[in-house]
Image (cartoon, rainbow, N blue to C red; front, side, top):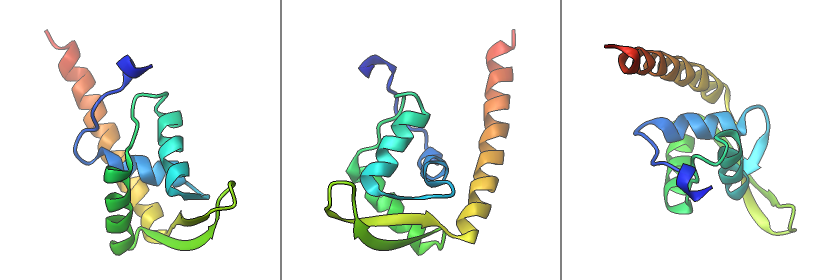
Length: 110
């Protein structure tokens, strides 16, 4: 599966985090696992990238967080989308859909 992994493009991480959390609430490791799952193993987000992004997104008002217990009975910080985060998910999804379509057209061009 390692051969299928690729580097995240600039701006992709926010969208993947917002999408991974969705309507639920997840702790950092859960978010990382969910991103790997929804990208079918293409992206694996390391803590050094994930936690600064979560902090920045919380500062932007897209996420809220609280302390709770993980499935291993360990203390963990859980994240959920705010209304602003839900709106941002829509904005970013639309932008990436436009980019993906444009790239698909460019790759098919002769």
